[in-house]
Each structure stands twice: as structure tokens, then as C-alpha cells.
Image 1 (tube, rainbow, N blue to C red):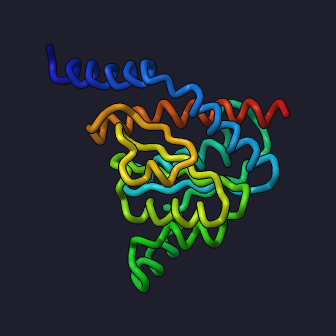
Image 2: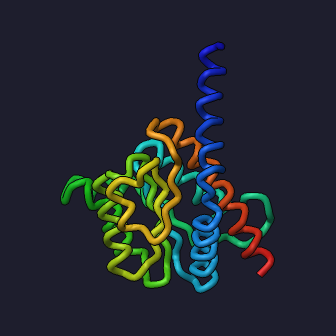
Amino acid sequence: MSELNDYLVRSAAAINAMVERDLTSEMERAVSAVVTALSSGKAFLICGNGGSASDAIHIAGELVGRFLKERKAYNVIALPANASVLTAWGNDYGFDTVFSRQVEAHGAAGGVLLAISTSGNSPSILAAAEQARMMDMTVIGLTGDTGGKLKPLCDILLNVPSTSTPIIQQGHLCLYHHLCEVVEARLSNG
């Protein structure tokens, strides 16, 4: 088997493991939380580091712009996208609180935070989840297999059954594209 085919087989195995894990209930709760927040004028905040920061920006682009339907923009903010806030706050106060500070600024009770961390152990993501919980926001975790330290801070956990960062990120893409599709469909029909 070629290296490419081996990689694709491992990727498919992680997707199949998500099917077996059956995240249907968790995804329905996540969709419902996001739809409820956006319908009531609350922000949907998203944070992640590295590749997960890119995922956060990708999700915001899908929901502020469009996913599949022509419709109004949704109040979605990718917290890693504001370079001025990240560098000013990180320089003056430390990187661990760059997202929690933005949750404090943009979040509100009834809003939603999507916290993305393949390990579930990123200090800046944990701090953001803690801040969101203090503000009575719903916390959705998008993680790897165990959920790490983020798991107990989440109201809803969408965890990909793998310990390989790139494979987890591929699973995350499937999950958040589905989330975007269903959120958009429900808000467009509501």
C-alpha cells in the first residue's frame, strides 16, 4: 500500500470511529445551542491555536459569509483573527489569557463558545472555556479522543477518536462543516 493510501485508510478509520461513537446527540445539542444563541442576538465565539485557529477562522467565514445558502450574516467571531488584540494582550499579560479576555469582551449569557483543541489541554483554550462558563455561556468542545482537561469545562463535547493531531483535525473539519450546514439550514428556515 502506498504512503498516501495508508494515510487515507487511517483518516477513514477515524471517521468510521466517529460514526461508531455516534455523536448525533451531542451534535444536535451543539446545533441547537448555536441556533438559539444566534436567534436571540448572542454571539457565537470560536477559539483555537495553530491549525485550530485556522479552523476557527474557517468556521466564522462560513457563517458570517455563506455556507450553502444566500442569507443574512450571522454574529460569529473567530477570536484568533484579531492580530492586534492577540499581540497586545499576549505581550502585556501573557498568551494564556488572549482568548478569555476576548470572551469577556464579546460574550454574554446565552451565547456560545466553540473551544477547539486537539489535545484538550491548551491553557489559552481552557482559560477561554472557564471565562465562558463564568458568563453562563454554552461551551462546546471540539477535541481529540479523551477531551483532555477541556472535557469537564464543556457542556457539549465533540471528540474525534484519535490521538494523531492531523487525523483529529480532519475529523474536526467533518464535524464543523456539518454544524455549519445544519445551523444555516435551521436559521434560514426559521
